[in-house]
Image 1 (cartoon, rainbow, N blue to C red):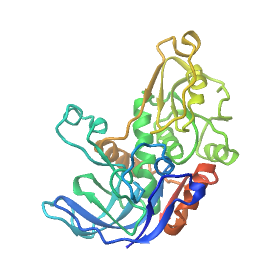
Image 2 (spheres, rainbow, N blue to C red):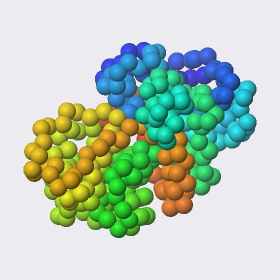
Image 3 (cartoon, rainbow, N blue to C red):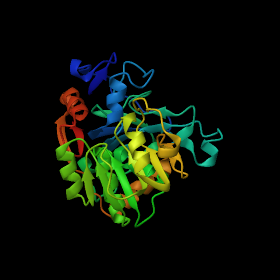
Image 4 (cartoon, rainbow, N blue to C red):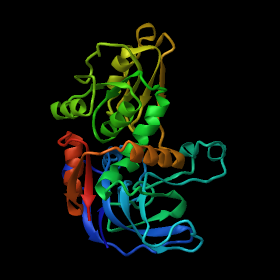
Length: 332
C-alpha cells in the first residue's frame, strides 16, 4: 500500500513526510482493516510532524480522521462486518480498567493509544483500528464531509460541552479553522449567539456566512460579555483577553492539544468573579457517537479542500499558514 511516512520530526517546510510502499497491515484479534478513502488533515498532525508533541512512535504514518470501508475483519469481532463504512479517530485504545476508564473518562487514561501518534494512522491506503474504536458513519455524510467530524468535530463538540454554554447564551470562538467552523454550526443549532475572533480575513468571512453575530480580530474585545468561550488557536497569548471577555461565572475551554506559553494573569482583572479555565483532553468514544448523531440531525456541512495523498506535506504547510477555509482532506 502507499503511505506518507514520517521518519524524523521537523518543520513541514522541509517536507518530512515521504511517500512509500508499505506492507499491507494484517488485522489482529479484535481489529479490522479499513481501505481508506479520505483522511482529514488536523492541526494535531502538524504538532506531531513538527515535534511539538513528545515521543511519537517513529517511523510513523500520521492521520486520525480516516473514513473508509472495512475489507478484512480479525477474530473476536462481531459488531462490524466487511463492507461497513467506518471512521478512525484520535483515540484508538485504552486500558479499560483504570479509575478514568471505569468512570466515563477514558480520554484521561494514562495508557491510552492515539492514532497517527503512537500507532499508524490514515495517511495511507489502508489502516487498522480496534473494532470497538471504529465509528459507523451516518449515510447522510459523504466521505469528505465525514472526515473532519472525526476530530475537528468531536473535539469541538467536547469543548462546547466543557464550556458549559447553554442554549441561547453568548459563545466566543477564538481561531476559526476546521474545528471552529463545525462547532459554530452546533452552537447555532442550539440557539446560541456566536462571537468569533480570528486573524485571517477569509476565516472571518466564513464565520459571517455561518451565522456569527460579531466577528473581530484575534484579540479584539467583543461588544458583549460572553457566558462561555473556546480557544481553538494554539496561542497562549489569547487566554488573558478571552478571560476578560467572559461574564462573571463564565468558562473558557482550551481545545488544543498543544499551546504556546500562557502569559501571567491578573487575578482581579482576568480571573476574579468565578471565571473558569479548563483544558480539553482528547475525547471519549461516547463524545464521538453523540457528535455524529447530532451532526446528522442538524445536519452539519463541513467545508473541505482536497489534496492528493502525496501532497500531505503541502496540505500541512497550508494548514499552518491558514491558507484555506474549513478543513483539508487527503484523497487516496
